[in-house]
Image (cartoon, rainbow, N blue to C red; front, side, top):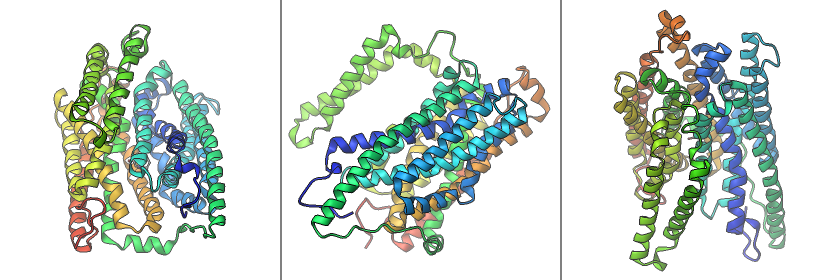
Length: 526
Ligand SMILES: N[C@@H](Cc1c[nH]cn1)C(=O)NCC(=O)O
């Protein structure tokens, strides 16, 4: 789109841009929630629905099947042809209908036989999965449309941050929402997608208005509308014959295969390996923060935190050094007071599988923008991907081979840092390797390949878990023994090792092809 110099459009208003960001990010929040919330329900699916670990794995693994065979590319083509409003409605609607089918299937609506329940839930997950990935692309496109030339990097980080928040809350709260049953937790998650689709409908009103304004401006200035590049198979061939792109695309497969599938099993691992709980003790830990006694305190903390943050964001030229110090002091004090006053709740949460595991995606909300800023200012993207892959190996070794809870916590922290580092370095690097007009094709290709890795490991971890515990399955289901997660998690170390290898190859290829992955944003190699 060409920018008008004579008049203003809605996207020139800071407030409207941020309203749009919230409206669009709703779908990211709900679809990521639905993608990952089963992890908190694995134990319940086993005890209430009688699902084995392999069946649990099959259910989440099938989410990727349509994407493996080109659904994201089809979605990309529809997005190019019909525009983001219709594509968002179509694929958001597909995700919502799929989610409703999963909920109905789990309630026995299509039949109470276990295999009917499982198969209808799988059907729903396939529909949901086809929607999820294209929705992700639609949301990113919408953010680019409104924020290009403004706070684009920050807006993109916040948009993915909403997705991570969805993952974290879905993992942490689904057991509480279900109150001992699977269907209410699924119905809640499906309702969220419906509600955020309504938010997307409101966004459409903003989008139509912006298009009209831009059209009016262009007509007034005799400017032609800039055509966006459509998906082309010749672009795909060019991409996969570029060695830097090939390495980063394969890294996307192996790295995410070591993270997303692990997250689906992390709560169950903590429960089985370290004796964490699935449920909080009756009446304790749940939403204490928002209980009557602490609600006032919480609001004071939130208020002070926003004050400190707002103050620290005032441009430095207009702020004294003492003022800056005061702002940071306020932020630190608020954090300390909040953690101190919630220490009892926190200690319960840190022994609860779903809540502890949810800290992995939660931590990335804070760390991804910090690492993204580092990559922008200092570069070193390829080296950071090597470091992230190393941390992935450390995490999986410490969570599989050893039986030490401290090492377990360290493993989770290290996984959280890796999960912040690699995406922060990977996605801006793709934009350096691939010309802007081919970025849509590049992301669609990467997500398609990524879904092969995800599908294999979503299912593979569950299948290997059943296989590795074959002798004890009866006793485990009777609650007399615990699953041994050593081999399924050790398997993920391979993902880390291949990721390190690929990141080294990427760094070497970059030296040859000179994309400047190790340089700060905007700097070109000589
Ligand atoms: N493929 C997307 C979206 C997604 C999330 N969970 C499964 N698929 C993706 O990987 N986005 C990048 C990210 O870091 O979330």
